[in-house]
Length: 278
Image (tube, rainbow, N blue to C red; front, side):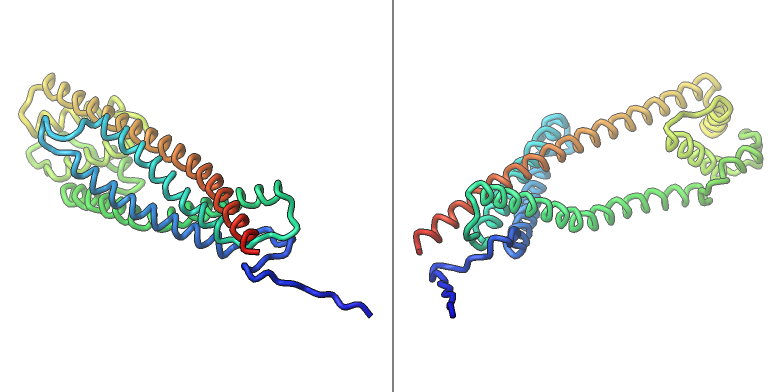
């Protein structure tokens, strides 16, 4: 009869070669990375608010602020991902009987998985306040538009407005009704990515002339100026959103690289310390 003897090293626990993922270390690294991201975001928000100013000639320019914000997002991703990845590699259990190349791959995978989990957790944590903020702002704007228009905007309102459209210069015309119709007209036109149709533009010009006392030519110029300004603001918002998306993508990719690299460093130090203690 043969008796197998199992010797456990006093320096720490070793996992079986088949255990390729240490979820406790990954979760720990991801939670730390999320916490560091929130701390650095709060700090960056304070720096950003102190750097800008509504007064002319004070604070940084809009271009400088955008570039600085993008660079800071990359710095946040590098710092938080490196710390989280390092902990994910350093806190894992040792793999006995695993080739060095396989250990290197597993450590890299641990850092990458910790980064992915941290990204998902961060998106879930930040999505709620962002949604509430955007929703609250949109609700405030919508409430103001509805209050001024005294009507709600529905899918059929644009067609009904066209059917019931009258003479804006009539004595019994209600200014609130005309304003509400113009609000819905502008909202529908620019929400669909187009612009005012010729009949809608002519009607808007008549409303402006009747409400302001301007001549037909001056009212048309004012409408054209406002339409141009709306297009410029929409285009500026589009460019700012695209720029922010590119910066976020760059920060995420660099964060994944830093987390994977830091995990291999942490795993190597963990194995070296464990082998010396043996």
